[in-house]
Amino acid sequence: VGGIKEKVIAARREKVHTLLLPRQNEADYRELQEYIRAGLTAHFVDHFDDVYRLAFDDTEVPALWGASRGHPVTTIFTPADAAPPTPTASQAGISSTAVSAEA
Image (cartoon, rainbow, N blue to C red; front, side, top):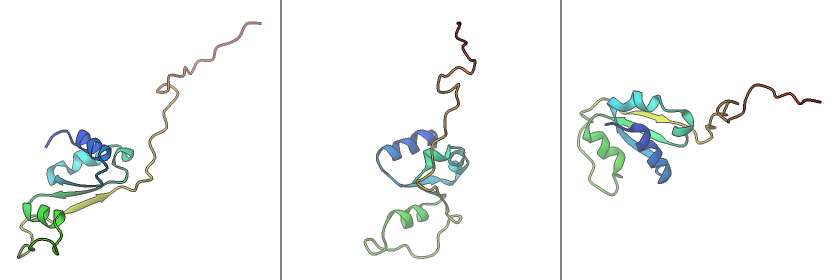
């Protein structure tokens, strides 16, 4: 799927902490800045069996029989304390050239 960054930002805005994404988008997710991924757990799946097992509680719905037919699920957890980057002087709009005061 496309727009992984936008999907992750929307999930954070709506206070969703667990994401199920296609395995093919794992590299896209890893490329995101750590502060964007902070506090999120992302599971990368390639078969519906894995989606079903992650999305539903076995005590609430019938369990699937047999092992997953997909590859093992990859999970990435990013701690919530990942700090946003500190802006550089130029990003903050501060000029690096000194202005001299005339006497």
